[in-house]
Amino acid sequence: MPTFRTWLNVRRRLIAPVALIVFVLLFLLLRPLVFRTAHFFQKPLVSSATWISNQSRSLFGSCSVKTSDYERVVSERNQFAIDQVQIATLLKENELLKKELVFLKQRELVGIPGRIIGRTVSNQTSTFIVDVGSDQKVILGSAVIVGDGMFVGKVTRVDQTQSIITASTDFQLATGVSLLNKTRTIGIAQGTSNNLIELKFLPIDEEIHQNDIVVTSGLEDQIPSGLIVGIVNTEVKLLSTAID
Image 1 (cartoon, rainbow, N blue to C red):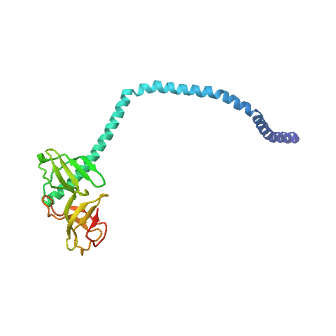
Image 2 (image 1 turned 90 degrees about the vertical axis):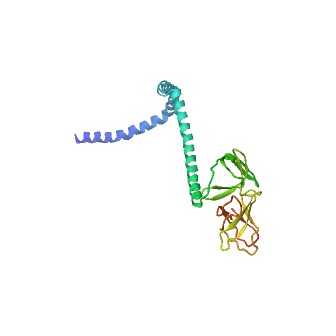
Image 3 (image 1 turned 60 degrees about the vertical axis):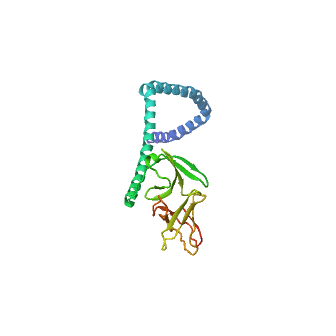
């Protein structure tokens, strides 16, 4: 009996490796046949599954989402985007108007708000049209500002319902200015190319330093003093210098 049991145990230990070897050999021998068989059934199975998926989507999708509902959702989305842009624009305009009102109140000035409705911009010319004119009591030669006292140009033409503004960077516009330095140097600011402004007719012995602030001098009618024109970007000791 011990001998018989020992033979059975040895036989059991040999069965598993032999079975694995046989399985591997059968797989290697029959692999081409298995692949050809799978490839034969692959196309009809994929086509059938695709057809069933499309039919299900068409059947149940048409019941859940109608064309009119889809168009309505798209229209509401587009309108929402437009509303968001308009709100952002109004908030920005409101912030600018607040700054302007604070500045005008502090300086005890009267301002007429207007919207830009047209522009003409080139290397040397820079003008724009606003939607206010003589009906709103706009005066020829008046200063045009934005924000908290930034001088951007003058009114150079007034019609009944609109006005033409010439920007401070236009080569045809000259403005009396002064520097916020020790001597409060007075000169003329005139536009040049590249959106710069050149200071002219300054004393030859005057020292002009970089980052000196340039403001309106107040020597012109309709142009109050202290409006910010720009900042000197080049330190020189000459008759003129350029500012932003």
